[in-house]
Image (cartoon, rainbow over all chains, first blue to last red; front, side, top):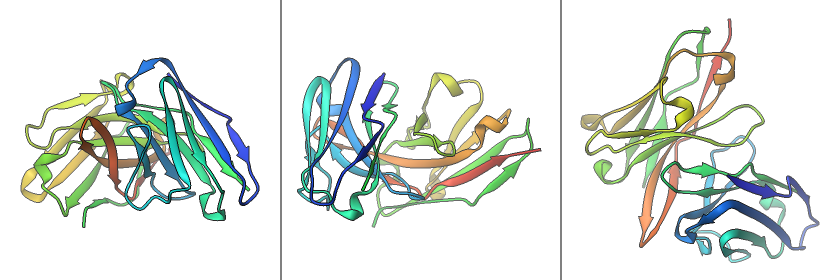
Length: 104
Length: 121
C-alpha cells in the first residue's frame, strides 16, 4: 500500500510544497514514480526512479527518498502547479497512492 | 510524436459489456507494454492490467481478474480493453498508457486522453 500525505496541501505562490509517499514495505526506488494530474486531464509523468525529472519538467520539482519514504518537493509553487499528485510503485501489480491535492 | 488515442465516451446498462480502444502511433508498437488505469469520478487512479503487444500476454489486477480482457491488433497498432458485468461502480474514465524503461527505471510516460464509461439504467 502507498499512503500519500497530506490529502490536501494549501500553499501560497512562491512557497515550498512538500508531498509525502509512504510504502507499507520497502520498495525499489527504481520503480517509484510521480505523476501530476490537472483537472480534466490525463496524468502526466513528472518524476521516475524516485528522483529523475521527466522530459520538460521544470527544475523546481524534485524527488527524493528510498525504502519506504519518498518525497516530492515543489520548491517555489507556481499557479500552474495546482493539481493532484500521485505516487506509483511499478511492481508486479503496479500500485498508486491516493493522491495529494495541491491548491493555492 | 508518441500518441495514444482512445475511442469516445460510452454509455451502458448494468450487466452489459464495454470495449474501449487505444490506438498507438509514433513509436514501435511491439516494444512497449500498454497499461490500463481507471479513475472513478472524484477518485484516485486504479491500475487494471497490462498487455504485451508483441506476444499478447496479459497481467490483470486481482480486482478485475474475472471481468477484464485486454487484446491487441498489431496490424492497426491498437489495444482494446473489454470490461464485462458492468455495475454503476464501473462508471469511470478509463486511460491507456505506455510503459517505458530508462535503465532500471520504469514509468508510464505517455497516456491516452481517457474514455468516459457511464453505467446507468
